[in-house]
Length: 315
Image: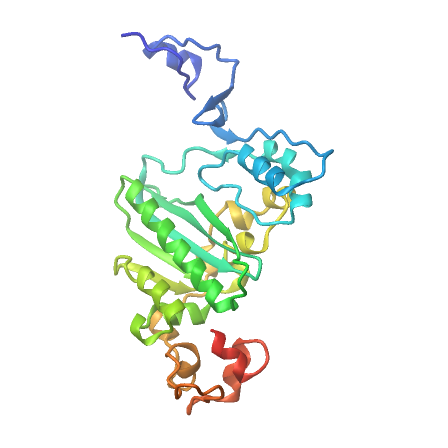
């Protein structure tokens, strides 16, 4: 059987030794699986056609979003629509390396990051590999983002939604990788969300407990850790950037700097008994009471929320 309609990133001389090429090697821009592949540099690029001279409706917005095929979420961003549309043509300048797992890799570690803001929340996954020569390489693998729900939620709850999104994305990545993974490390800058994750779901309010229960279905060897907001890779997803900023953002493309990560073990993130009544446990006041005050709460506990002790009940 003769192979046809195929191309390779090998040089023409090497490729011709195995199979004759049907395509001209000068045709370096090829479409594969809905994306554009440069067979010389072995990178993926995007083709964007945007009409700027029009008034946008909801249907137009959804139509323009659907025109950008990004199955791995490599370009996931959250931004106002007008600025987003104006910068879309710059997506064609971004090139993403196709190969993320080299044959010489002897150690593979998966790092996942979650973050949230009042506008959006998201999760991003990187793969860190160590070669036989002990050279470490970390590369963006995939990401997922969600717009914050119209129903107003506190930031800790949105952070928990981001952690749930990260746990679901991690399951898909691990099941798809046909490779032994040394460890899986999941990072969040929310101490409250991490405290919830390390608490039995039956001790939490319904909204929090349901999501914690799903997160805790992850394998026990998946490690949840704390990281400072300054080095959280998912911060780009929750706050949004235009295309030019995204293309030049090393924080997004190069992955975590492990030496500068402030690691906190899950056990150190458990909430003290002083604040547990506010952050973790169910309300246990009398039926019909509208002003029940937990007996162990202190004024400093309200620093996590907007203004007063009453506001904290929405956590």
